[in-house]
Image (cartoon, rainbow, N blue to C red; front, side):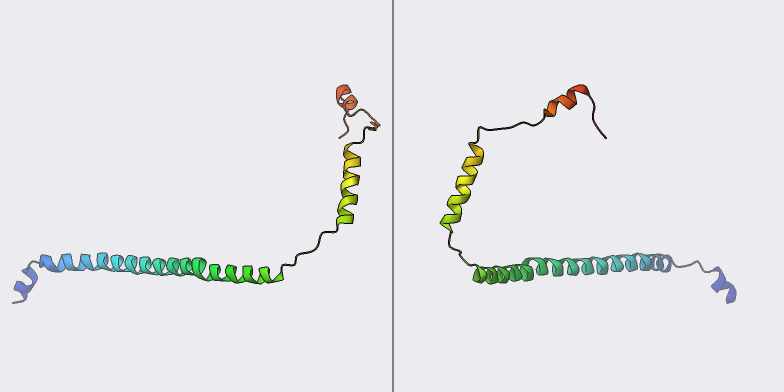
Length: 110
């Protein structure tokens, strides 16, 4: 009787079942990892496009309440405008040195 058990060939279904178990474990781990990644990405998407948008809208509402319209000081505007026009229309330009003279001689300081 013991010789019959020893000589009995192994069933092919047992050999293939044990090799499939490893493949199924890998597939299940990959599926759980993908599900976790999808859950994380969904959370990030919801946070960025929902909660951040609501926060930005609230900040805009607060900023609009703080806006103050200041009246224009026309006396200062006129004085600045006249000084600017005087500076632009000045025909009295005094060049104290020639900026191209140094570059022509090739003497530059380093």
